Image (cartoon, rainbow, N blue to C red):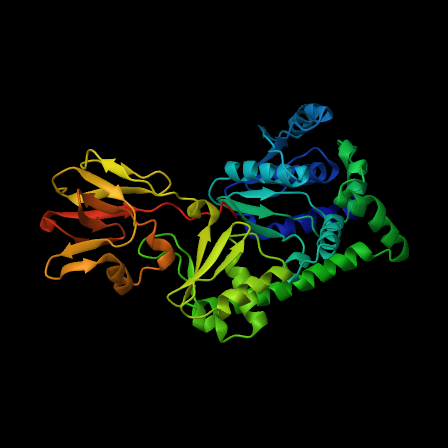
Length: 442
């Protein structure tokens, strides 16, 4: 065995050392050079090392006729190595970016296959990292984007690992040729119509002619930026802790932050904290769009400012910043009869209601606020609903979607506040299971 091959195997083993006790390793096998070498390396290592069970996954997008032969190619390759292969066919949604849609479909399929603690290994290498950093640089990315692809991150119930980020494509090709491996070439990779292909085929070779070690040095810069991003993450976590980060309000999935601790920070620390808070909720705004945060932050105390983002909006109320996803905001209130109060009532787009205890008698109906509602509370008399909601600190933007329980012209209960009951109130409580407030992001 050559020293180059031994070094490559040892480097791969070192990169995967923290996950040697994982329940399983699954390898994303496209049939291309990098994933072919990764699968072969792992098969060789498994013969002399105690490793988790290893299998391969091939995602078939069905986007071009030539790709129809790739699952069979991958199957023959895995059969020769004695490695199990799973082929998943996905549907790629049409959109502005076919490349992005295919990637989203691919990673959704990967995530669905991973069980608790399992690892998905992908073959991105050092040249891919340099390409990613340049691509993001030309799009104006910040520290997080310029840190490039992470060596590991969560994916579904498991982990995504990129153990070859320190290996160049030339090293992978030398390994493949020395072992007589064959791989498929995606014809679309030759088209410079795609930005990444232009970087790979035109720009990076030109840079390498002037600076031969450019791929390595760009990847090294990405490592430095990843370290800086780690420090910014630690700072954000500390600032968000001070901002009393919450994920629910009275059992409703409404992420919120206290604004006061945020406004005591410098502008850059405010943006840093908000970027980390928003990252799992929404696509982050570009630099120019951060003016929306300043407008929201600096609005009058009695105002109801809104900062709209691609996946939802941020509201300010009761000294806090609240996140509302687009799907959550799309609710349209409508009156509904509650025919069988012994059963839960489904509210289209607004969760469900149910009673605990004996439901109140009479024909019941669920309505939503129109203004001027009055509720008779035992021991407190007739109280204006708006005043009651003010006393309870219910944010104004939320009030229009609170289900109200009526019996004819009598307001019996208010969802979210089960302690408010009118009529024969001793034997029942009204409970609301609110809708999710999910942007569908990861």
